Length: 364
Image (cartoon, rainbow, N blue to C red):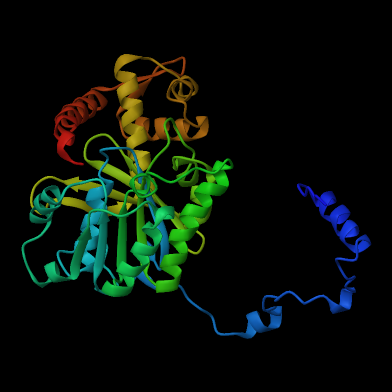
């Protein structure tokens, strides 16, 4: 007798056929083996239990778990990750931040040769005992094709405090995609996050931003929302004109904040944290207004906001501040133009930015 079982209804029909043929005994509900149930936690148990605080590696910035750093190509994300690794290994610190502790670091560099790493290390810090605390790996199987197991074993053997994976694209390069891309990408990142949780370590995963303008760190992540949903925190490095940038931080347990960064090309070479990122963004928007007024003037605040695609209230406030500082002048119809002071500031900014733009080609 042939039984074709392809749907849930087929299962029921086939069970009846077996019973009718005397090949299957009826099993009562109470005789069925009980499924193993997960442990149930009461609210009182959780409320009154010991509080498990996240273990910080860098206060307000880096904690145990999986953090993702996203930025556009050539914006300096690999430099930032390498600087953090050197600092946590006990080498040169990054100006503006300080690790809570030092420890072993495992850097999985899947997109650069060892020779490039060597050149970058020599630029960042003089030799010292920290060199023995920083280990590099340049190849790994695809994450869902054996790479996860390799990484877990490397972490078990080397017991690092901090792990960097550069980049996500290289790590999952040959993975077979699910029909449901969201679910597939979520499972990939969640697998990596679980490795970090099991080892109780901090991991920084480097990834790219999506094309176009984004409204925040989550929207900036390239790929589906499954990637951002699986990580514990997201850093969005946004390069601004010249050698400045902002680092927006957002996470489940991390306070949302923004840092201002500057890339120093002289000694000491590399990124340094220089202040609050929101203030830096406002300064960048002031520069945009001055640049626009250099080519198009006079303009009202509403017209400026429209042309720059910015919030009208924010632009109005910035224009009034520029006017108060003497950088722009206002005509009788409410239009604004560069004052002599504003022309001097704008000319200096353009000269500096043009020099800095030509220097950025070798950063990453």
